[in-house]
Image 1 (tube, rainbow, N blue to C red):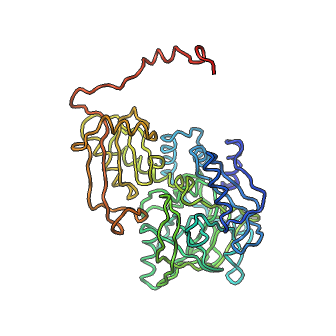
Image 2 (cartoon, one colour):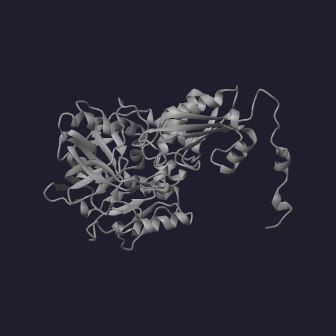
Image 3 (tube, helix red, strand yellow):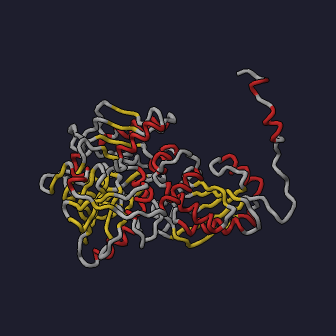
Length: 463
């Protein structure tokens, strides 16, 4: 059986007992009921995936759709997605990087063989408001989809996949926000010709496919083939209903909204709670019109919980790509931590330093890898980069402000960074908190390892 969201759920149930949690009671996603449940679970330390069996639609009616969220909240679930037994962070980095390089050509299948074609709703009959679209946070501009958008390169054969937030407007329209990356680049070219751009809005697939949309893949590479590498099998695609072979969509998706981004049309979009855990501002964004909706019987719609752990961990492939770039620059790099390092724009690098100057090269490689990064902390390899207490100890004991802190000016920032004073230009910070090699330095206080191995606390103190 080809991999899809249902095979992912089956593997999740086998690998992690108790997941997903199932909510059988009717809930109203557009009235914050789903997000309220998810937030309370997160506050109690329960980061299980959650499958809602009876979510109502935006139109407040019972629907045939189910709703899945919290699919990215833990490394253990990422390991299920990548078919890896070990959920260690570095192991996940290496697995993602290895499989994403094993590109696989897509397999085109007939509509009769595509589960996503089990139900076909044409333009005249469709209503986006029939979907169970969530309101995520109190200041959001409306109910929001958090889909993977697929688009074909203008005048080419390559496909791009990307996460793009999309705000519900009415039965046929969504507002779409595009960062100035690949999808935005495609649309710039199409709009210059006064043409619309067909896209597929994918609302559920195997989580390896969904993760493929976060990677830092070069513009000239086919991201459908990257998805095939992550899946470990060719991504099955099928001609779209509205555009035929002009737009191939994932055949094993749960739901696909087919439509186009309209040229010379803009609409207000936002605010929206972003991965920064802050409310992103209202913007003048692009307008999408739906032309068809296709889906499986009793479809499962996937939604990322905006501004929470689920949202942050959906960016894991970016973290893996940064790890690759930093390790290519300095082979002594052992580990990095971006997603749990205390902030969306922080990065901590743990490395075995061989010469002075290596920490700065590692930090510069990270900054050049992604405009998400603005603060880089470099520590020795005996420091866990995810442990904020260890990081603060290293900064406190191994850093002098006049020689180990570097401020960089006029670097490209991230549009979602609310601290930017200009739209894209900002500053960066590098803190070298490694121990110096050019002079004697006090070793860390520690017990002999053999003593710790010999003494078992339970033999001396009862609990």
